[in-house]
Image (cartoon, rainbow, N blue to C red; front, side, top):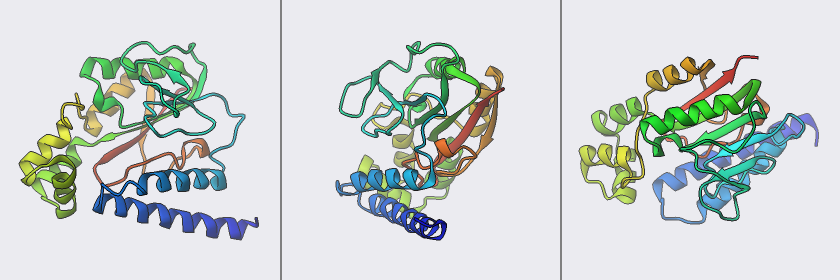
Length: 235
């Protein structure tokens, strides 16, 4: 495929991903959307070079049903997406400095404050010098601003459909708790501070944008309520 054709294909796939996100947000019960999104995301990685090998082991923590080919997909419960079983609230079963890249989406908020600190410390231990971690999690500031104070209709409709939340107060509380599944929700200042104290350099980024090809086109959610951070271990 020529460079021009590849660029056109990428633009088409990105539009498709955005359309699928909108479709999911408008109708979360449509079970056909998530598998199609994952297939499109995988094709985008292939076209963009993010699926390349040879850069070192890559760890996908809290994979759930989202298997990323070429990565070590880790979760607590076994299923067809999982390569290794581990409790991310405890020590991870990998050697020091053995991992080139880490991706974690919607995991750390499921851990209490102390376990979250422990997870970040484990990620620092596992990464080789110059290695990078992509960390996605709900953004407390955005939740308060858009769901509670801003009372954005699209967010309140999703909360009503998915969380049975009536009005902004219930919507905010349900977002923070997710029926007891969420244990601690961060804002950027706190999460940056935790990462910096470990020795990471931290930058905020955008949905599926990264200076590293390996960390592009991995992200599932972008509804305006998430933090996208990349933390690099000094090399």
